Amino acid sequence: MNQKTRKEQDQDMAQVLAALKRAARQARSEAERTGTPLVTYENGAIRSQMIVTDKKGQS
Image (cartoon, rainbow, N blue to C red):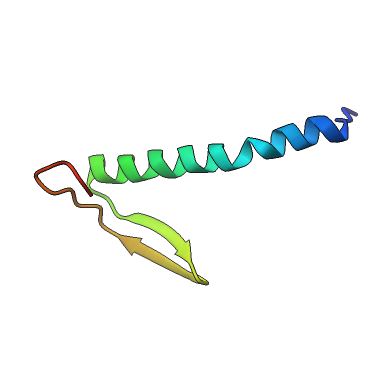
């Protein structure tokens, strides 16, 4: 069994937030590119919204 030290576990946890932000950015980009809704979970509810960019490229 592979036992990680406490320090190794803390280093992994420190990278979780950055990974989640990267995944969210990718999901938003993919939804915009394919014209499909972006599905999120907010305040105990599932939310589906279309991502629309204006002519300036801002969403």
